[in-house]
Amino acid sequence: MTCACLRWLWPCLLVGLLALPAFSQEPPEPDPDAPRVIRLDPQPMEGIKTGRAVVVKGETGPEGHRFMLDGLTALMPVTVLVRPVSRGEDVAITLSKYAWNQPLREDSTDGDTLKFRIRTESEFQITVSAPEPGTDYRLLVWVGDEVKPDMAPIVVKASEFDGGQGLSWLTMVLAGVAVLLLAVIALLLVFLLRRKKG
Image 1 (cartoon, rainbow, N blue to C red):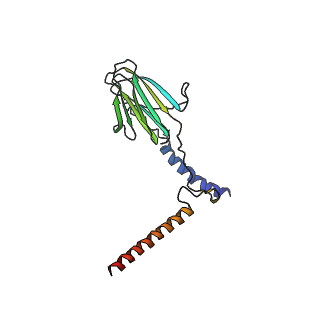
Image 2 (cartoon, rainbow, N blue to C red; image 1 turned 135 degrees about the vertical axis):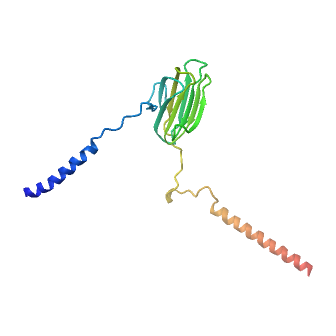
Image 3 (cartoon, rainbow, N blue to C red; image 1 turned 30 degrees about the vertical axis):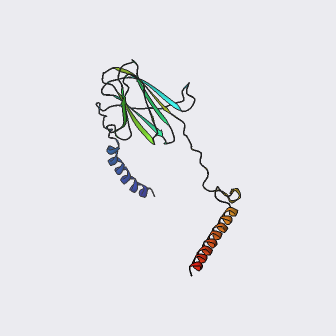
C-alpha cells in the first residue's frame, strides 16, 4: 500500500514543482502614464431625502480627472452636476459608456453649473477637465432609488375577471340584431326597386 502511494506521489510533486514558476510570476507594473480612474460610491447623504449621492472636490486641467460609476439599472435616475468653484472659470464634462474617447454627452460650464440627467444600465464614465491647469471644481453625482412602474398583471384569475373594458354580451347581441334588420331592409328595398322596373 505504501509503495502504491509513493508511486503516485512523486509524479504529482514533479508536476507541482514544474507549475510553480508559472504561478509565482508577478503581475506587470501598471503604466505610470496611464490616467487614473476613480470609482465613485454614492451613499445616503444628509439633506437628500431619496437616493444616494457623492460629492467630489477637485482641481483639474487639460488632462482631466476620470470617474466611473457602476451598479446602475435603467430604472434608476442619475443626475450629474459640475461647477467651477470660482465663478467665470470654465470646466468641461464628458459622459461616456464604453470607451473614454467616444463621448455620449459633453458640455462646458461656461462659469456656471452644468447638469446632466441620464438613465443607463450597468455603468458609465465621467471626465472632468478644464482648459487652465489648477481649476477647482465640484462634482455631484446623485443616483435615485429604482422607479418601478405600476403595471397591471397580464394574467388574471377567472374568479377575478370582471369582463374587461370591451362590449358586454347584451350589447353585442343588440348590435347583431340591428345589423340583421338593416340587411333585411336593404334586401326589401332592392326587391321593391326591381319589381317597379319590371
